[in-house]
Amino acid sequence: MHGTLLGLSPTLGRRWSSNGDFLTPALYLHKALWADRGVTIGAVIDYLDGSDGGQTYWIQDGGTPNVLNSYFESVVHRLRESPTETHLLEGLNLSALLQHLTLLAANLDVSKHIMPWFPQGVDAGDGELHLTEGVLDLKWEITRSLGLFETIERRHHTLAHATGGHPFPLPTWLFSKELVTPHPLGGCNMGDTVNEGVVNDRGEVFGYANLYVADGAIVPRAVGVNPSRTIGALAERIAERMTP
Image (cartoon, rainbow, N blue to C red; front, side, top):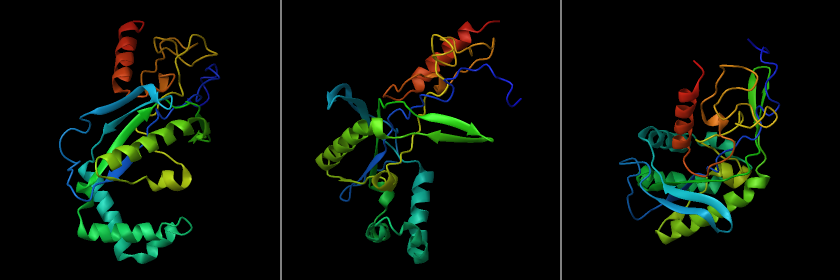
């Protein structure tokens, strides 16, 4: 089947968005949070009106699954027991950080003292997906979205300090400005014509009758909030309007 859909829109793979996801944990040394219990998101702080530096986003309280806690503990234990593995951190000035984390983990159940803040925002949505010899690659420069993430980072510092916590930016962001998103959107966007999108408003691929896409890939821009309801609503609408 490879190479059989030659009439697809030239926009395929373009305008991918991270939905402004920016995981920013904070460490609370003097109180237990038990982020692995209860609901993952219990409240949000809303800046969707652009009142914080003109950026559109919100921040939620997060949670940590037990498997993630176990993984974190195993990594710290492995590094503590095998100092030679720290060569992976050379050149990143993380040695002192590792020493502090190791000491902390030895005397504190770290997983019970971390709050993972979960922001989402409206990023530039300018990523591009490329498929080369069966390998899918994402090209995404953070430049146009940097203002959003720096605003979120400053707000995170403010919230962490106000609640007695210590901001703990992920090393991937701190040293290389790399991010992780659980809410990827776009790349197979809706549009009015084949030159503007891959599918129409019913999720049907332009030029290919009865070929539908009904997931987050068709959302044409960041929504700045959890997109599950938007994706679910689109999928239900597409299902209702499919040609028998």
